[in-house]
Length: 426
Image (tube, rainbow, N blue to C red; front, side, top):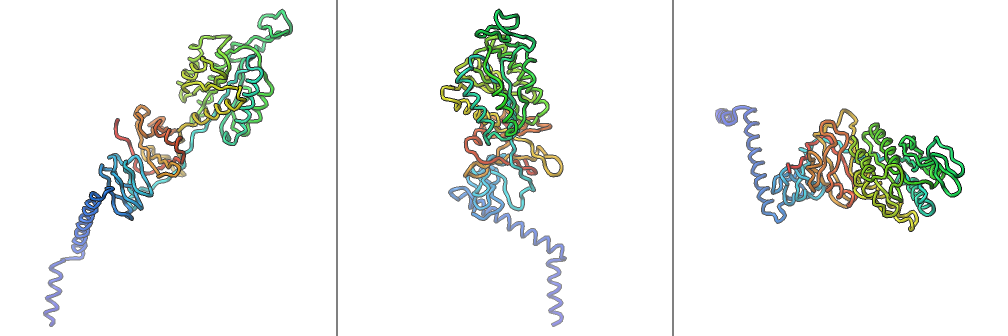
């Protein structure tokens, strides 16, 4: 009996040799079993009408085209796009573009709500004689409503008016001395063509709602008179805002030029005037000029195109101030656009090569926009890029992504710490 027991022990030792060998063999058997299970799962997915994996698979399965499925309670649909996925559905499975998987292999990341660049606007408002009456009343009413609206809270606003009077001239009654022009039975100072006479602003840029009362008071303390010296007015506005932009590089800085007439004094060549807006738009960081034509003023289109905003917004003050208010709100929406600040982690710096932009439309599933190298690589596709790839301060959505965000609403979130999803070369 003792010999039998001894023989059995010897047989066990011959088979497994040591605890280390036993663990190694067990690991090999486990790996082989896992590989077989994965093969079976893949075969099941291939036979499935939707090409997906069974529910409750936490780590996802790969799609037909290579991206890993990022689903929790669903299955991947038609596969990935080969570069990690540009859309990810976190609840119901990855969409046709694929996405990263979750579960134990998910990276450690921090997510920040996308913070749009602060917006600062400088209103250069025409107060020429032709603005007297309904035009002046409507524009004042619209700007008052705009600065008092809760939707405008946080926007920085400043204002100046043109024409400016020449401060060195004293005018009384006709015959008018040099530097003065007739105005009814009086003489008034001739419009100044010196941009410095439009400085400093009537109201310096400051955030709403606090600065709103100063804007309203400035409008109430001036009135229409004179011609339309658009050139020096725009020159002074460009000087104010390029200086301001250089001091606030993470802000979106714009000029809003509002006028009811063609340039009629000082420089009247519209191409020369528009060039001022073009130089401001080419500044680093850029200052975009938006134009509001109170009536169909051809010059305003030329200025808007050169200033980077495309086309002037034409308003009709016969409708009261609503048209002008709508124009101001439209400009606010366009200017805020789809530029976001780089997030600031609680510790250390954000790694620009481990950042993803996640978007969740209202009532929809989360998507991930892929990174492209620069604006030229957007080419009508979803994506985003940095203002400066080596030292970024802004995250800028491609037009297709921006349109999607604006049209569908929802939220944009910035994720730090995960492998970056990059669009394939185009």
